[in-house]
Length: 473
Figure 1 (cartoon, rainbow, N blue to C red):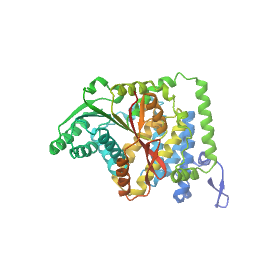
Figure 2 (cartoon, rainbow, N blue to C red):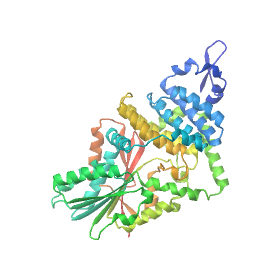
Figure 3 (cartoon, rainbow, N blue to C red):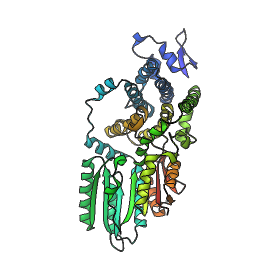
Figure 4 (cartoon, one colour):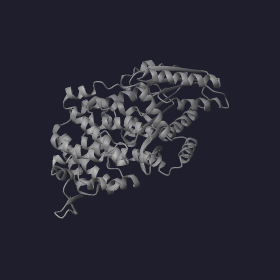
């Protein structure tokens, strides 16, 4: 609802859209009326959601003049150091603006030509995420315990880490293996990452720890993106017991499936997009604040059928199927998959915008509840990690859009089709993980079991999933 000024200067409430109201403002005013700055946090949050969805609709429709008006007004209320909704709005606004700029490749390249992505920044922000949230720690505890139990009695163990970015996981595993009653196995870890510096640091840390614990150890580095990985370079040897660990990686393979999307009927895509926009417009006319509150408090998901939102069905994911079949061909005793449990792979901009608003609202709320607003570390995680993910989800298409997070049920479908069978996660691992969450002394972090897998939640909203698999012969 938008406050409007009457002739006597008092305000009333009307159902006019925020964009209609703002378009009536005189450009010479330079800023919104003072009442905007006096809005309470909840009112301002609802207002920002309305504006973001309005702006998204205009960007999707190519109405750049109207999108520009909405972006200007959002920027008056959004702030990267404000409350949760102000911070989220700042990054979604940047993502929408980025998408508009991509329509002019020369302008876009000129504005981004001097941007330098430093490996040290990537390492820093991943470390901050690991330190500030329990999500990766829980995933690592569950993964390591599953590996220890699967490898009981094995003398030669080979672990393939598809995203070798955090040495803490394998340092903990080395320590656990050193305490085995039968003694530690000969351990070989093959780490895959696109940055050589990240792998070098990993190799140094793990080799140092293995020497300290007197464990026979070898680290093999493979500098590669996952979609370019040569399976032959993994060099799995006869007699090795193999485990595969995939953390936040498999979803990136879905980018290649856009080739299949382009072959779908244009009419079907048009109808799908129209139905979704109608749904969003209906939400604009209702109380979105209640939806957000319901979402964060009760685990409401705006998408009731995640499978219908993906650009192609599970059995049509050519790159994913090929990769999973290659992994199956290595005959691993165990594979543990950790993924973001969100539906960010919809075929339309508006679908992804709404889904991303819900899931990132939960992540930003985690930080709002546990870290001061003035924290520089919090700002870095929000900008350099979440902000970049949001930008990729909203502004990119085709192979460039790598952040294609999907729900657990979709991963269960894919892995089942690739002849993997789900195995329950270790009971001992579950106990350790629950104790770890309790140590945070924050009621918001929760864990729940679903389909013999684990969902790590903020309040009741699942944010990350962990599942274990073995080859089905």
